[in-house]
Length: 75
Image 1: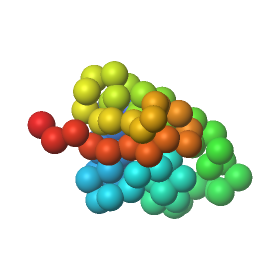
Image 2: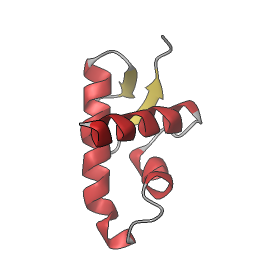
Image 3: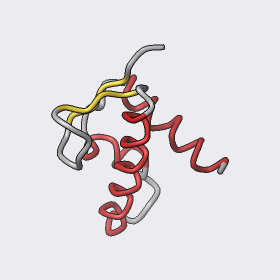
Image 4: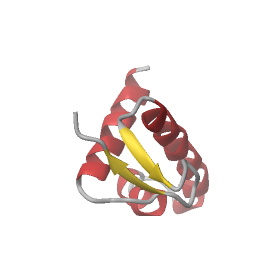
């Protein structure tokens, strides 16, 4: 649980820094991980983003998919 919450905070930080796509986020979030694992990491990021969109903490255009553009919704 702690790791998931930490990753969620990292994703929010990437959104706050201006990253809009999963492809933008994964290299920064998983820089220390073998690039062959990045496709699986992308699915993990998507899962977090779907949750953030459902909670109203992020927005996806046009909808929460691998190819969407995401923005952070300010509190």
